[in-house]
Amino acid sequence: MLWIYRLLFIPIFLLLLPQQLIKMWRRGGYCRHFFHRFGYYPRRPTNITNKKRVWIQAVSVGEVIAIGPLLDELSQKASIEIVLTVTTSTGYQTANQRYADQVSMLGYFPFDFWPWARRAWQRLQPDAIILTESELWPEHLNQARKRRIPAFLINARLSDRSYRRYQLFHPFALKLLSTFTLCYAASAPDRERFISLGLAPTRVHCFGNIKLDQVPKPPLSSAAKAALCAELGFTCPETQSPFILVGASTWPGEESLLITAQAQLIASGIDCRLLLVPRHAERGPSIVESLQKQSLSWHQRSDCQQAAGNTQIYLADTTGELNELCQIADLVFIGKSLPPHREGQTPIEAARIGLPIIMGSGMSNFKAIAQALLEEGAACSVSDGPALIETIQQLQKSPDRREKMAEAAAKWYQSNQGSSARIAQSLMDALA
Image (tube, rainbow, N blue to C red; front, side):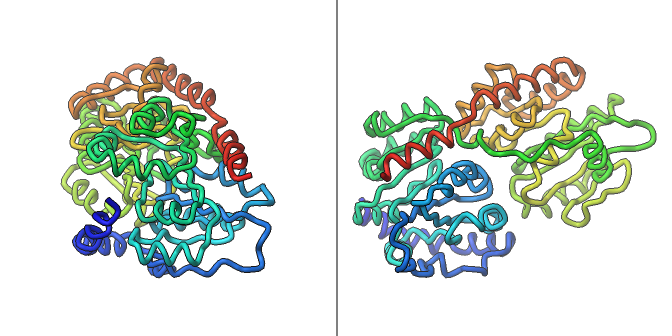
């Protein structure tokens, strides 16, 4: 099966390369350490013999931030040296800002092709590897298997689509999964799925979701929130407290639905302001095209942070600011969750802040979390655009219900912390 993967890699790689180059050009920041993609890393120093080198791979910003508490735990161990790789330039920037003093090397993950993966392993010489969530790279795991190096999968999850694919190619999936010494599932349903695919129950633990352990920045004070509202242009002489709707990590099609919901609220006499934070900042130009076709006043953050007074729509096409921007929200919609999107973005940040949440029914990547928030009364689920608009209107009219949802979200978040410390201890026991 591995040889089939190797044979298919080159034509698929060449087919997708133009699209990936365009994406890399739009996002920028990929020129630095570009040859890491082909396994050209600094060689491991030969004078460090008393430490175990742990290679952690985190894809993008979300995973990079999520591993923070775990990385804090591991970096405090005198016997551990950490190499951290990422996939995206935004992930690299975030990792460099947060962990530069905690890791011995930071770089980009190599393309998962045999000569490049082998070169990376020859140069880095890890004593253990850690992958995050659904990161199953066949060649990378094959290198670990050949060298008998322990591999760990943390915050492991299987979306509905991934689970169906692994069932369809079960022998290949089991071969990959059997490489892991231990798998730390993000939820009980995820654990059951890994076991159903053939992993021994003793090798699949469920200590919780590490994304719930992120150390947040202090919440904004009332004065800071007022200043942020003024920066976004969400104040005017006529009203001091507009209703603020946030689209968090939105995907194509969702912004237009939120704009429609806002317009209907405004038509009914509600001073509604809309803050759009797309999942990918490079989508800014396409969203601007949509904003230019409607009549409400708008501002684009990548042009200038300060908006004019009485701005009605603020497009935050930047990276890494969602947590702070969301703190002024009265209601938040979680993106990538309405048709045709089915995967969903994480609602964890909104819950941590203590916000009433609306999400579409397509939350397959966060099914257990979404279900828990719904059961706790912290969130509402909608099936399509009209239902989203109707639910926004209903919740705008019910501040008491929004307050109860917000309290339930914060309570759920606080009661589900602590997994990073448990996973770190388990990893240290396994590496002892």
